[in-house]
Amino acid sequence: MDKVIVITGGGRGIGAATALLAAQQGYRVCINYQADEASALKVLGQVRELGAQGIAVRADVSIEDEVIGLFNEVDAELGRVTALVNNAGTVGHKSRLDEMSEFRIQKILKTNVLGPILCAKHAVLRMSPRHGGQGGSIVNVSSVAARLGSPGEYVDYAASKGALDTFTIGLSKELAGEGIRVNGVRPGYIYTDFHALSGDADRVSKLEGAIPMGRGGRPDEVAEAIIWLLSDKASYSTGSFIDLGGGR
Picture 1 (tube, rainbow, N blue to C red):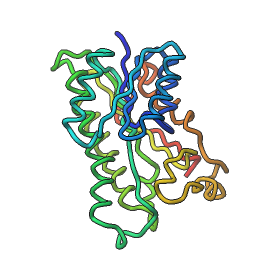
Picture 2: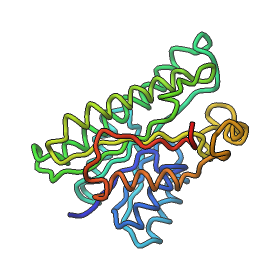
Picture 3: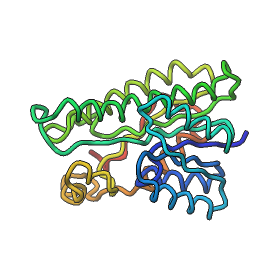
């Protein structure tokens, strides 16, 4: 069976590292992005240099019409999806709950919870034998914040990732008999530009002293866990999580 992967938020950080590793593992790669076309096209060029077939598709994954368009384009250009990485996410500036606006909270919940649910829905419509599929694998990119709660920083973000973890567990049981595995990874303190969204681009460096392993992580270390969970090597794993927080 051809391996076709959709990676949301695939133009930077963990998503980009996952796209490159997937290309090396023989996947046809769809790099989804919302706004940063230049970064997505750069990663696409690297994917193609590795000899893999790939496309970059703009879509806001929190809007179902755009998700439908994303998966239709994958159908036409790469074939039926067999792997989905729900990586797209956002976070607000460091603040207490009583300083957060309704708009901020809604944006985080739409991107971090609604987006993965919609993408999983349209992946299942292609993976499930109920719809002519042959199975597949989904990995949801959560965060150690789901366990730690992120008090005084961004409890809304932590809550969104906690919801994503619950969705991962429920969906894994719903689909276990249909040849579709659903797992999660929980990165934390990874050196990417994601932390700039919280207003502190140097957050990982500042926190290294509190990390048991004494260092921040790399995007490729998270990508290795994602690709393993997607692969047949993890064939008996569903509803599980790999924590990638250096011991926290």
